[in-house]
View 1 (tube, rainbow, N blue to C red):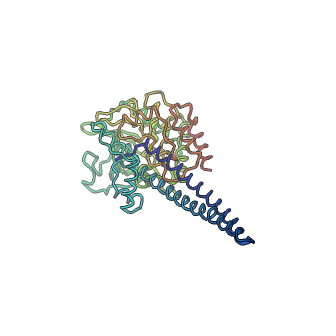
View 2 (cartoon, rainbow, N blue to C red; view 1 turned 60 degrees about the vertical axis):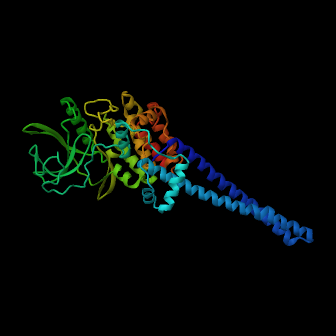
View 3 (cartoon, one colour; view 1 turned 45 degrees about the vertical axis):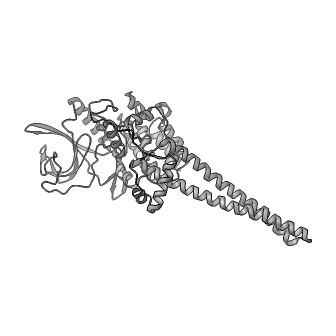
Length: 457
């Protein structure tokens, strides 16, 4: 089953209006009943004649007790509706990340009983929020659905979880342990695989320091000019010395008997990607999300000042690095994030999956238009949107539907999808930053950070 965005928006609006109306009505009746109850009690107490006392009693009963009890019932119903809406929001956020919803998974994710989870799923299904996905069966759509379910496989960061350095520990098709690349970098372990290559834990043979080495797959169609351009951009970004941009230390080529392998060497960071954290938690608290977003904006602003665009800001390209000073967000893959041969980001591969999907790309990227700093502002806004709601703005089971919504529909307000309360001003800021027209967005990352800081304050 998957979330119907249209049905969820209608349900969220309807239940939101209902619980507010119930609370307001309940409080009004309680106040009304309390007032007339006091008046009736006074008349009953001080009435000098029997008719006066009967009138006071009638007033206390009919005008006081009855409205007061009805108000209590409305108030209780409003609280139950608000809690119900909160659980449905949590379910919707969970289902947007996990299209195949089961009662067991919902019970575990929302920390409720199996029976309560079954009732919640049934409630969502009866409202049309959860619908069966039986129509899309083509190879392209199946690929796209898998893509959406995993938030899109992307370039793997220099993550610290290293495979034990033992012979045979590396997956097939990877570099052997102990291999020394370019006479300098000794392969110590395997960190992961990305769209453009593999990431290894390496040791500098002379200094003994550990780094992360990223290879470029030989079938990535890297031209000589593209490699030089990437090297310039990677070195330029690293030279900024910004704590939010991963430092690149080397860019070289290793020659084998039957070919060569291009690679770059960068800082080896301890921590996890933002994508990994979201996969574990679903969504983040507003304070944490706003801090991460402002750190990303600071890194983007520094890069933009140097004339560099990232072009692929998304959770997989944000690393949450931990050190003795605490945690900081670090942007990965400057220059590598966009396909190196400068093909359009919306190009479709033979498997049907988009190179750079519409989950985070700006409308101008999808159209193949010229890009500027406001494209990175859009990517940052889409990343913040996912941090607070649990899913990117246009998560759909097929690439075609995601592209359609990206190019023609505004994103739903984050407050309608977030499982936790958000500042009222955030919807307006995200709405502007996710605008189809770049001119309607904040002018640059620094302006977005300033607006975000105002919202956080």
